[in-house]
Image: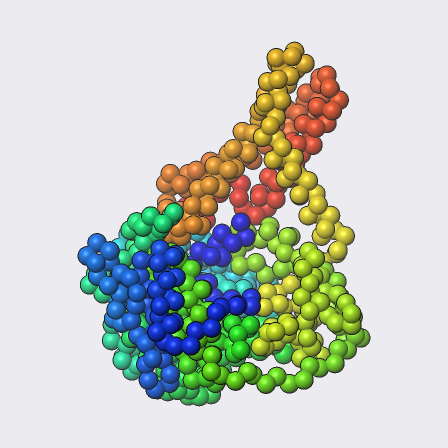
Length: 616
């Protein structure tokens, strides 16, 4: 379940795994290979743009923007770019900073005191503009009911900001942990409107789209140009079906519609060192993390100002942003050293990562390997205080935070080298500084050790902030939960056992329901999670969680019944404990009931008990 929301929409670039693609030596081979993937994955339409700083290598597409009219994807077809919008908002904020209309270290409270956020650390660690830009506010990400609607309506920047007010609570002191949060950019859109007097979309059009000659792009919350916009599709089991195009309720975080022809101009803005929108110094700032503990500890990779670095296992790292909205999956990437960039988007709820890897490998094919400085010698005394077990302590969504107990990483020294051990899967890391490291075969450091505000050791791995935990207690909790889950799974067979025992007259009528209640509880949870998983697979369905619907009621009723039935079952088992004829049966049913109760308590603490998605 950890990936349920993370993969739904607006995800930042997160490429840390090595890729091994067959070599492609010509543009024709690349296009043929992409065409094959499009067919294999049942993609309806795909946009592709590749450029140098001065000339276009390719701009066009594959497949269809609209199947019903057989309208093909061209260089002018508009795709929903999702969180790519954040890069435009970030550029707009940097332009305002260059003009002296705000400062990146300025407090949010001073610029917009009406923004309804809560920060218990405001006196010592206030939320600043840079925290919004780099996702270090500590806010929970958007609630499930504030993402999409089917209502075709335009909302003001202030209305969209107010929609997200329930997420605007700092869970830790700002400026410490990076945790991706769309709410930050909704607030930035409102700040643009407050400073300029223009809605964010109009300001970005005047300040970015027009100067870059991005003549077809726009910041519409829903489709307004049927002759240019893509239709959206899903293809479960290879059967393609058109689905409703949703209205985004978080415009400044995800509203951009753009084409390959237009996005090439945006890529060339980066490749030409910020011209004509920003100074080279501001562009360098945009590519450099500033506000997190990791940045202050000397780690220069990861999410910066609406711009993130990835592809750490290619010859070169690539910068950019990606986004998911509705069924559109998009990204743009560039490397200023190589003077190359590309953009991709599809409209069929498909992964574009295989194509992304193909294009990156193709563009690097004739480039020399990077020269890395010699590894730094390991200082055992420096790393000794940081040895131990760590757990993710910066969840993006509180709703899924209970899964963090399973994300454990042990830092140890093996054969005079530091290793990250994840349940037996060891990764050797190479020192690049006293407390910074890079993984083997990576092209840049992505790991740093540091001490947090309370002096406790932490490690940041690929942008994930982890705190040290007690090894015995961490593994004990996992063992207890796994045992509980085993008892829950076995409870599926209890009704069959009960019926056989009843026929053999070894079971009393008063205890018979105790063999059925666990299965009823589990069935209720499965019912809820099946509906929730449907949204995972087809994220455009999030609009159904904004209101009381068949799906949202199933999630509410299923999680509520699971908790209630579990509680009733435990109470009945305890009440009937002395009346059981079999000593094994009574203890087995008690342990099973307690296993269900343990999972209920975990879900209750994370907000799942009777989850009303429409009222989050």
